[in-house]
Length: 113
Image (cartoon, rainbow, N blue to C red; front, side, top):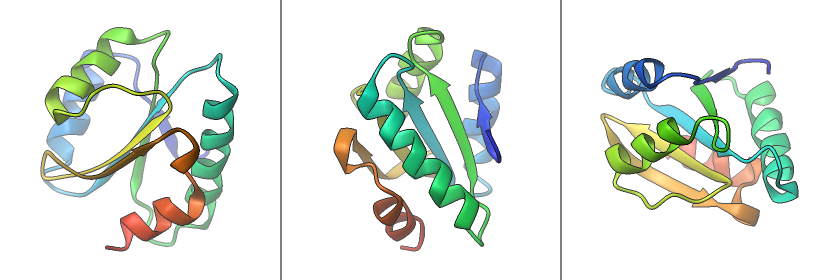
């Protein structure tokens, strides 16, 4: 998954949440059974390949890791959607979107704000 790291435990998520105090991060919530999610994930991978700032990107497979997905929604205070992408800085969601609105162009624009 190139430079997109999969979160598979609550401890990993909690460490990423803490890391957002030092540097912005992207968290992508992905459904492995959804075509919209597959399309959005392609956009995230395209963004990551061309990103010169190298923002840390993380993926959570929501079906396989429901507890992590739910904890992200609670910590971020953003209702769960799938697919969904969150830009988190200093433990605050500064941008998020979901479904068809997840595009390389929109991700790039949000990260550069």
